[in-house]
Length: 246
Ligand code: BTN
Image (cartoon, protein in one colour):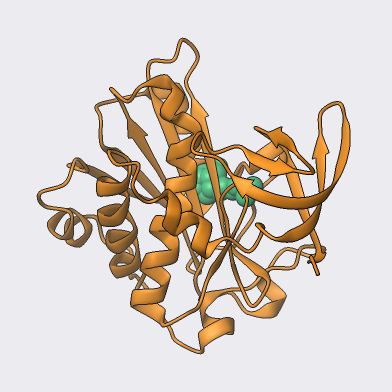
């Protein structure tokens, strides 16, 4: 599937949703940086086959060659600002539903919003509020058909092709993710589904915070999206799954 990212097909598949402005680029520095800098109307979607300066959480880079991934960022306006952390959690649910439906994978969520298959990272999500709070940008990177050699070194990662042996059409998967997200960003009744899909709740975890490290069993994801570890609510941080609690 050489050129399976197609703006016209995506736009047709997204009819009836807020996502009425879809651009597909061969190469961009970062779909996320573009939308954070330029803004645009609610529901603007920017997709790139390849990024030269892709950004991950906590200042990390997000790297992948062309032709193998979905790199998409979408712009949302008019949501209450307290909804921002929930939007990126909702992104995890949207991706999990979509990869289940399109590729038959069995994903689990690692708090806050990594999507794992077989314990390996398939998708990362970056939610950012533009300075001044005018708009929210949600960036999603999905490993679709990387070979083992094309995945970043030093990270336990996988692709849909490696995990399921299926070569999924990227436009079909993109449309599915965005159709799910269109509904989820307005609702809050998906949090129980998030908890059901969570591979973090019930685990012993190590959380790296800006001011230290917390270890203990993750017992809950609260309605505001915070993860409770050893009785302490964590709002942002990097979680490492240690082992399933007894
Ligand atoms: C993570 O660190 O897990 C989040 C990764 C988010 C990557 C996506 S790819 C599309 C969008 N553009 C970027 O530069 N980053 C996000």
